[in-house]
Length: 163
Image 1 (cartoon, rainbow, N blue to C red):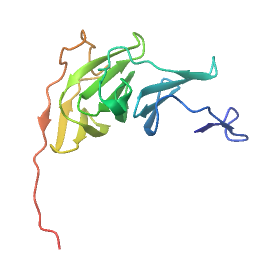
Image 2: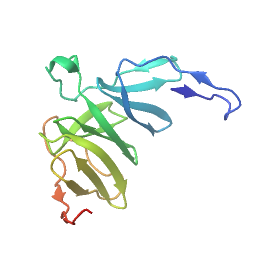
Image 3: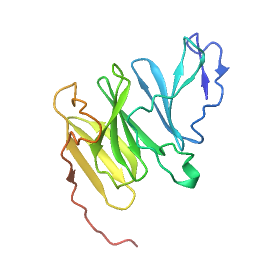
């Protein structure tokens, strides 16, 4: 990953994060976040290093996770960053409090997230697409860890023949 401090005139490589392979990235309030196989990283321009804001994310004991959550995808809406995790559903990060909270779909692996209109769309590995209606920004109030803050509806699947 590289950054340009002068609107593209020059480029500097960032050091590798401890998140392992990067699956997705997003910008929230001017800061770069990466989703990886070992959690979430955030680049600090001030410190010129990676930080790892993972308070509230589930910790796996799977051998290949190194006790960090496997994060597949991000979506941004207002002052919130949404993360899709392997086998743990959707989480929301609120930058002011620096904490993550579960939003539901626990037990499902979330491969893709999209914030569009008043909804957050979720693509799962084996269980189709879900949608949660998010009210006016700010979209959710972060609840204590473990509390679901949103109701999810499965989007109707259609079947069609392939040639």
